[in-house]
Image (cartoon, one colour):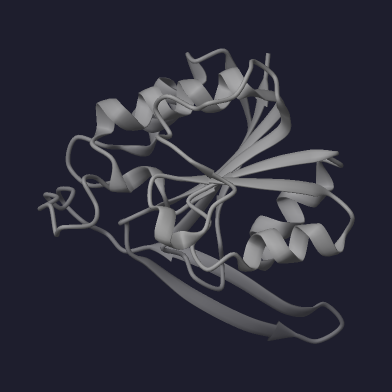
Length: 184
């Protein structure tokens, strides 16, 4: 969560929309920094500020400086994910920050080098073919499973009027990949 918070706050937003707020921890942390945060979820039991679909958001164009969704979009079929991302770009003014599961296994190594300190590296596990994704009742798809290479995800999301600024795996938990987009 630290990476999510850091990425959003580094964009210096006045307003943030979070899709899929879960228990509301991210919202509370962002609010503590004086930023207005609203949440949207289809499930009213999560007590979002707005109950509604990510594919048809009840907001005007450019309503929020930053729109974010952390470990949410993979819970939608891929075509609906693209529709939700398009809606994020519509209601966002400046940036979109998302995290998605990346199924490519990474081996994490930590070295201590005198005078330089700790150095962390991630090395991908060699694999002849990507894993086949089987819907588990939660995730419809994951990055780097068959049919969803990282290059496809980036290409599909950057044709929505957005430009990718950076993407990276979270070293503490490499299953999470963060994406930061600029809205054109």
